[in-house]
Image 1 (cartoon, one colour):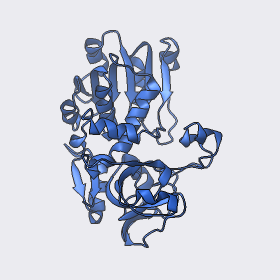
Image 2 (image 1 turned 180 degrees about the vertical axis):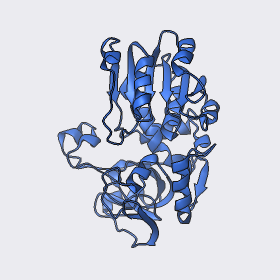
Image 3 (image 1 turned 180 degrees about the horizontal axis):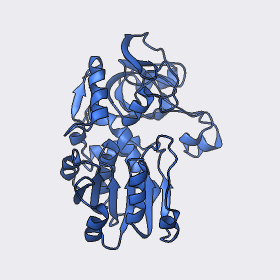
Image 4 (image 1 turned 135 degrees about the vertical axis):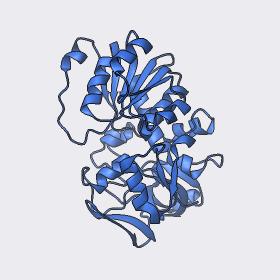
Length: 338
């Protein structure tokens, strides 16, 4: 089969590799869609721990092509999405549903081969059936939408809360779509440039702010004069996080949903301490696929605006370059096999 393989950091190519065979507890997926995530770029560049050589890709959808055990035969031929988490299922954390805290946790696309390929292996326990009403491309967006849903769940956000989102990448835009769906109000999306803020407006942002063009602190005094209930950083950038801490209302909540790339940051602790802020880490979000599917199936969330660049495996260099440079109007490159 064809697969995009990272031999080692900065060395990547399209290769012919053997079609994998599923062991017990796993199924083989004929990949139908696999979006490129910004964290995949970190794997390409060696900024995230990974097992090289590696086929990346943790966002996916497809059709179950083979199973490793008889008890999973009911999945054969089914359209599916699912978790890329490989866990033991027996420890206390797994049994309580906290898969990402499992001592044996491994994520497909980082520690195991992922979905930048014609076929991939996934754990059967994490599968969720994809209804015919949703395309494979939309199904593959369950993972980033699940990140947003998990983040909002951690904040305790409720209908009627005001919301500020720093970042207009795919995660920031999924945060917007999810926040709208659960009833948050006067949602503001802010980004360094205006390149993707037009997409945020299409998705229903109350207001958008470009850091290049406006003073975000002054602008937010007009929009949320008492401060914001729920503030989400989807950038992982020190300056952005510092701004978010200043924008939350007294007693408000700030969620850190952006990857910080291992950097040591200087944060003004008094912004948290004096204002009694609740600051939550939101880097691990699991088992949200079924909820994400239901929200898309019911029309509560439509991520069509995010699926900007369908590509083939042979065009992987183009897709990665788009993800790096983020030109005007670009949000997601998606490997499509439909």
